[in-house]
Image (cartoon, rainbow, N blue to C red):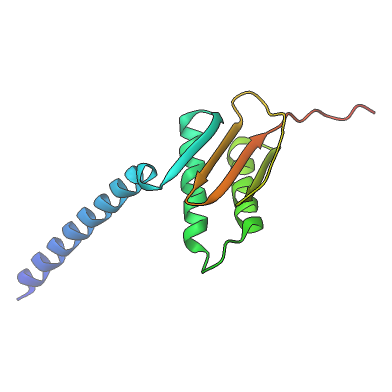
Length: 128
């Protein structure tokens, strides 16, 4: 009986591993399924994908109504932590903007009917 239990546990672990690998693969393929539309970009694809995933995760975690400030703060914090300071984010369903950004640090995109502008500015130390 003990041998059968060990075999059952081994098979269970094997199947769990396969399920986890499948979920990881689906998560990697997810950006193409996000209904994202890039409006304008001066940003490497890797950073764009990270912004898309972060925005989608935040939108999925919001029950009901869009919380623009929460989404903007989450994207800003994510990019400040990963790529250094001076990231700015504007989120909404209707807004105008005109910004100056650092090279390689600009992305304007939409997910469903939410528009997101993410950009980076240069930080220069104050001279005293």
